[in-house]
Image 1 (cartoon, rainbow, N blue to C red):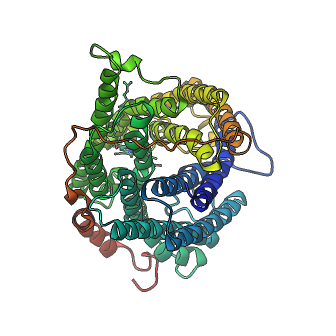
Image 2 (tube, rainbow, N blue to C red; image 1 turned 180 degrees about the vertical axis):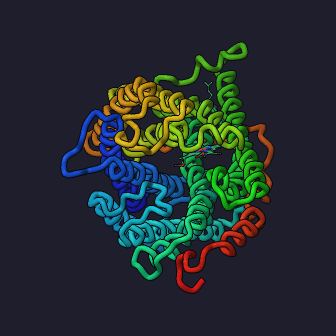
Length: 542
Ligand code: HAS
């Protein structure tokens, strides 16, 4: 990789790991405070810590890691970044880092205790929203920079199809850009005027709708880079081939189409949206499950074909010849396995009737600790174990490989105790995001105590796993022996069908995506605006 590209990628990864570390400390403390185990000095509160944990891990660690990974992969598959894309990438980095610093300070000062979803009626200092605008606009600069690189590359090479990794990167950033338009709208048009005091009311339903318009595709923005690793990197590591380039691209197209017009499945229990529109978005939610099922199929096919080439026999013989002792494979693979129950949990959430049972309970917290905090995080850890030495010109030593495997096992074990208990106690009605003091004297809370203990045990194992991760990453960045590490990029199976150029026709896919969004949102949104009490839509003039 070009040295300057490596620096850009490393800059993003550095901020992501700092955020991971601070966010993990906040996570451990909030779980101990919630369990009633400790009380913190200086009136540091549960919700304050929970906000730091959610913002730094779910929003900052992920976004910085993803952008760093995408830049490295683009540079690896399309060649060194051109000047303009690299410079805009740096500008984006500076804006995002400034925004992150500002937001963190205000959260730590207890002036932005609004949780990572930050929708109304919770209100933060205006500076928190200004900070968010910096993070969002900075990330748009990165998106433009990647698209710019892609277009220059295509013009110069006159190719119909771009390399699979780069195609997926362009798609991921397209999804991100379209999704963040919603959150940018609520922050700029509603929250900033309201928090400054230019208007004294805010329409909660509009703010939540604009948030979830963003909030659901956000989860696929986390997932798609993990899928990039599964589709492109894993086949090479296991000594196999990509099952089908066309299938992989089609899965990403389907994510673009179906991940956005589904935000109402987070608002199924909310008044103010008619059942018909909720039903429509639930149907679309079931459509967005399809590309994940395609991915599962494709991965099984890839494992089996690779195994058979190595001489594996029988239905499951391929299982034994997978490289279980290579952390580059092991960590993402554990993430994949966890995604099977995690995805099933998602399907439960999306089922309108079952959502009545689990909404706002700890079940949901359990769900997203299996999805983003296990499937996605473990894949990101697996990527870091080769990406960091690749970027710093060092190597993954056998000892670090072994420690990485231990770290993965610790993570899976910690999540088993924590997320398992969350799922179960959620079914008994234990609320999510509720401080100990709110429910500790209710009789039903006694039944929840064993689960709280299991959650605390799991959380402690997870924190130890984070410390081990930070040690390994630090070693790989600064101490590991110098050498050449590979950025694994798989080749496509010989017999696979040719990829149709239509899959790379952005006008068609972005056009259909826009039509679906307008179809799913225009009328319900119009109703919300019509029924919003005067002066509550946020900005004075609309
Ligand atoms: Fe979700 C709430 C529905 C996936 C994250 N979700 C959340 C929240 C987060 C989140 C953060 O419908 C909480 C937000 C908040 O704070 O309020 N979710 C779904 C559905 C899916 C889904 C239908 N979620 C995710 C992913 C996330 C994520 C992915 C993060 C990365 N979710 C919901 C709903 C809610 C919700 C409701 C709102 C609940 C409420 O009421 O508040 C689907 O996309 C899942 C599809 C996945 C599958 C699994 C496919 C399996 C694969 C692995 C194959 C394994 C292999 C290995 C190949 C169908 C691909 C085999 C190897 C061997 C050796 C055997």
